[in-house]
Length: 275
Image 1: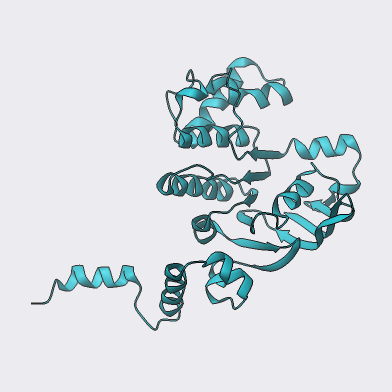
Image 2: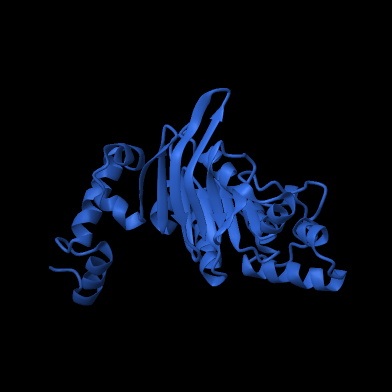
């Protein structure tokens, strides 16, 4: 679990994060959303320790990360996996070498043991026979899966994902979302995702923090979004008339006022078309 208490961050006298608090639990996908300039990226960097907050604190499993000494912070960072927006694979290394890199940096394991672990995580992200391929030979979706394999190779307690679906088509994005969700539950990780992708919000948003102009504007789950009356949140999530209509239909479906599309489909198959 990660707890954020009253975080504040400024740059050159300009407040970017103002009094933000959140609790991000293990075994669930915790999403930070908001428009460009809302402060979500700065907040994530404060949580992971790339920025030092001006005020407030970040706790990892009850340990105060903001007041730790360098050695203790390094130990926490060893428990963190990171999936970068552009995958951040080393172009000069093949897939196997990219994934093995953290093992070589932070463990004293022999090559055979490291290779076995590389193959384990590749299998977990549904990639086989790609060990010797270089990043330039991979599709965008494959690069993301390799980057995800590298992020989990050290069995982290915490997984941070920065725009994991950036540059991917909708179908591939769903595959990546599903993988992140499955891995989060399987390994009981605390996963924190920065995203603009509204499909991700509605698919994997166990906890959602909506940032607006540096402040926490709203928090809740993907189900809570459907019934939210927060105008700023609604205009951000359901920006188009089509999406607003979809929200209205989902509200009716969830309150039982209309059957779900899946149930209607089942009824059609059972009864057959009317003549």
